[in-house]
Image (cartoon, rainbow, N blue to C red; front, top):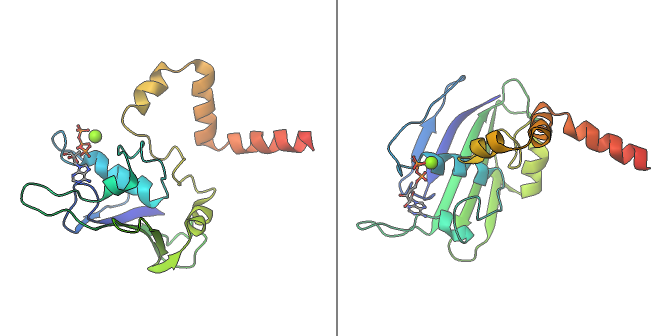
Length: 181
Ligand code: ATP
Ligand code: MG
């Protein structure tokens, strides 16, 4: 499975509809300060269900909607779609392509999620991503600043991060639960 494409429309600095296509392997996104590199990783986390406005670097959720510029009106809707290649069926969903969309309207503040363009609950998305190493709280996305936190942390804390990334921590949690019972 890999991320094939991101479609952004009205999300943060992406006022126009922008499609970014990826190939399997490593992709680097480069550009001057403030050009929107971090906004792309914010978009990925947002679609995966990020609820923390602070970690999206805003003061309320509507801050993810294009706020307008000198010569463009603000947008009323932010919409981002992630398109995953699922030909290896790593996601338990019987399609070669899995499209996950999140929308937010300025009015109403009603969150909307879609799976292959059909409306769904956030829970359907989190369930789909469970145990894949994706998901909003996973270590598959490490934001700016977290690398230095990682370097500065105590050895025990660093070990916990490795255990989380390696998938060991969930077994530790289950072991503790089992012993308690
Ligand atoms: P750096 O190299 O400094 O990390 P970056 O490429 O990661 O920069 P971002 O943080 O992704 O840059 O983008 C910041 C830009 O996005 C700012 O110019 C900010 O004004 C713009 N921006 C953020 N939210 C919105 C919004 N809702 N509407 C319009 N523009 C926005
Ligand atoms: Mg940045």
